[in-house]
Amino acid sequence: MPAPGPSAAEAPAPAPVVAPSAAAAPFTAERVWGEGAAMGTHIAFVAYTTPKVDAVGAHRAFDAALAEIQRVEGLMTTWRDSELFRVNQSAATAPVAVGQETFDLVAESVRVGELSSGTFDITFEGLHGLWKFDHDLDPHPPNEAAIRALLPVVDYRHLRLDARARTVAFAKPGVKVSLGGIAKGYAVDRAVKVLDDAGLVSFFVQAGGDLFARGKKPDGSEWSAGVRDPRGPAPFALIPLTDHAFSTAGDYERAYIVDGRRYHHILDPRTGRPATACRSVTVWAKTALLADEMDDAVFILGPERGLELVEKLDGVGAVIVDAHNHLWISQRLRGLVRLTAAPTDGT
Image (tube, rainbow, N blue to C red; front, side, top):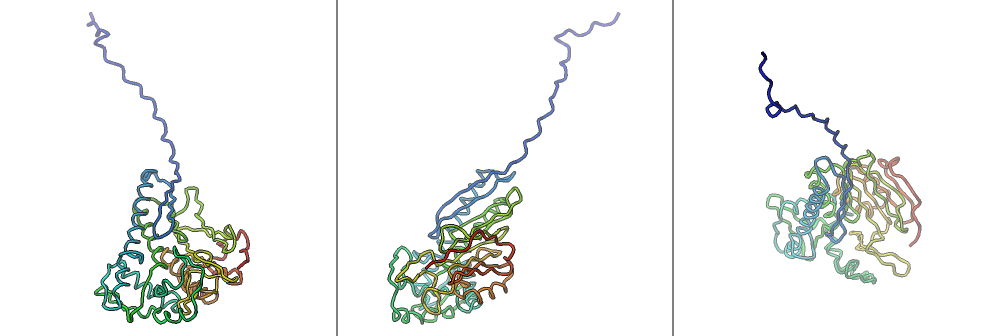
């Protein structure tokens, strides 16, 4: 007689039925933005999230990038105590030691001064107080005698650099330096490195007129930057940006008009007066530092000599609106720049 089977209580439990798992939802990149202030201008960040960096992580990266820009500002400002401030205070009497970053940027400024025939010149700071375009805006141009009195201290060749000791000295009293024409580009590049290290792959960093865009948008399209109309309210052209920087120098910022003549903050170190060959210059380059240092040089050189310089530099292009409102586009940007209007004419 067969043995009785187990009771219901003793019967083994049936194997659970496992429903097939739902397919993981596809990743959708989220556009995230942030902002702040440093170096006397508005700082903006835009990025798309990645499978590894969510919106919280992107904002954390923005905060770190802004802190890096502010760190650079602290090293190189001339408005308060900094390495550069101390150079201006004492370098005419004895060499002043600075950190490697500051030394390298001053050395780079001297190199660009040589490259640009002296039109990029950080000793323009020797004219500080003569022209008033900042918080001390005063629409009264200085007289010619006052300019002539200060011109002898404006010459990058007055700088004496010792790479081994990392010191900066001035050849004569009265020389001053400012990295205002280069430090923002450098700071943008430093912020880009922070975002790269954080794992972001599609973003841009903007500090006033200096911008760098990394990668492409999730849909495969490029970032683009508008070229401001120097006499109008809207951009007149768009430049695509992928792993490239964009910097604009214009006579419309920090400016005033007296007796039908425009005066602005981009000074020609050869004359001590506002440069007159251009209304705006936008430079497209592989780094924000290079774009920043080139836009002022090209602005002062003018379209012919400026484009000659641009074409010699790898990966650099320019869009120029000259003093007569004529448009010039360098070889590398022809076919890339999309014109949306003609630049507006005016004083």
